Length: 464
Image 1 (tube, rainbow, N blue to C red):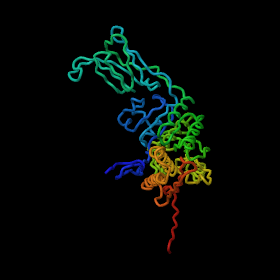
Image 2 (tube, rainbow, N blue to C red):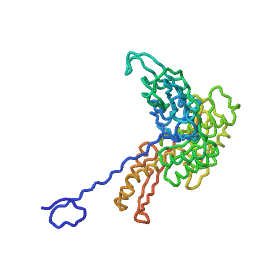
Image 3 (cartoon, rainbow, N blue to C red):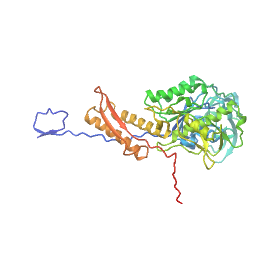
C-alpha cells in the first residue's frame, strides 16, 4: 500500500496519505523596561555610549569613559540616574574636542606617547609614571619596570614590563612607542590638552538618528533649552509615525500638553546650599539633575507601579522653587507639571506621577495624563508590535485560522498584563476581522488599565 505525506490531494495510487501541521501557540513576548537615555554634556565618551548596571558595578564603564566616580559623585547628573535602571544610553551633546596626551622621554632618544582613550577634559585627570622595582615573584621575577596609570590620583592600571614595546593599552589610555623602547624611570606626568567639544545641533541630530533604531524607554534631555523642541518633535514622530512608544522628560515644558512628554521644573538643593544665590547656570544644572532623575525613575518603573509619592534621594534636602501651598501645587498639577513636595513625614516626594497632558478630548481622556497608565498602554503597544513583527507579518495567512491565531496572541498579551496587575482581568475584549484588502487585518480591543490609589475620601459618622 502506498503511503506518505501530501501537500495537495493529487495522489494516484490507493493508500493512506497524512498531512500533519502544528498550530503556533500564543507566546509571551512582553518587552522589558529599565533603559534610560540621558542627553547631556559630558567630559568623556563617544557620541552615544551604552552603559549597563553591571558595567558600573564591575568597573567596566571606565573603558567607555565613565569610571565609577562619575556615578557616585552627588554633583554629577549620572548620580541621580544609575540606581533606578538596568542600562543607560548616554548621548554626549558636546562630543568632539581634543584628547589629552603626554610624551615620556625614554633611553636612546626613544619616546612613549600616552594618549587618553577619549577626547575631553576627563583626560587631563590622567597621569602616567614609570618606576623600577625588584620583585621576587610574578611573571617578571627579578628587576623590571612598572608602568602605572592613575586617574584623579588613584592607580587604575599597572603593568610590569621589560620594554616599552610590551606595554598594552588600558581602559584609560593608549601607548605608542617610537625608537627602541628601552625603559627608564619617569616621574608622574599629567596628560594635558584634553578639551570638550561644543554642544551642537549637529551632535543632537546624530544622537537622535542613532536612538531611533535602539530599544529604550524614557529619554531625559539635559541640554540647552533651545533644542527642547527638537527632542519633542523626535518623540512625537516615534509615537505617532514609527510605532515606538517612548516618553521624554523635558525641563519646564508643560505647554507640550502631550502624554509623551513629562515636565519637572524644580531644581535639587543639597544640604547647606542656599539656592537664593544661584545664578542662571547653577539653576539650570540642578534642574537637569531633576530631569535625569525623573527620566531614570520613569524608565525603571514597571507598568504596574506608580511613582506618585516616590521618595527623592536622601542627599536632596529641598527643591527650588519650593511648592507646598495647596493653591500653587494644584495650579502646577492642572498645568501638567511634575512637582516635588513634602509628604506628612517631611520627606521630599514626587507629588503626582503625571505627564504634561492637561487638555482633554474624547480620545485623550484624563487617564492619559497618568504615567502608570501610559506605561501600560505603551508597553502593550510595544509588545504587540514585537509579536506582529516576529510571528505574523509575512508568515501567517489572512484567513479565519490566521485571524484566530492573531486574536489568541493579543489575548495572551493582555492576559500577561492582567497577571501583573496592569489591566483589569475581566474588562478586556478583542475582535479581529479582515480588512479592506487581502493583506489587511483589523483588531479592536477594549481594556481597562489599572491605576494606583491616590485619593481617599473617608466618610466618618460619629454615634453619640
